[in-house]
Length: 151
Image (tube, rainbow, N blue to C red; front, top):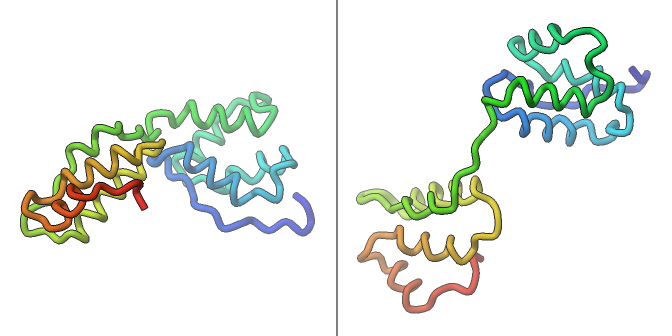
């Protein structure tokens, strides 16, 4: 370890969440050291909680020769925890619930929209409007003058 190295504050991986997100977060937190492959490998186990650490400690000696290979093995081992992206048509199932606030609907809608990703602005604007209560003034307004984009 370099003499002035201090471990950045990253989340510990528990073996239950998306390994791709963990690796992305780890790389981001170690961004000043990504050029140092050996350091990236040496520090990685400190980002693991007991279940994942047992996997790491069980790796055959000499199996890993680079950080890229370590991450590949990590991804293979925890592949069942990968988060599956929602399909775009999941937005069609979003409806504002009776006796729920617009704020509640907006929060649920945009949370789902952000999980989908991609360039779906036209679909998002349309499905958002269709999910509003039929007698909603906002729905009526958005029907009369559809927005040009999400913003």
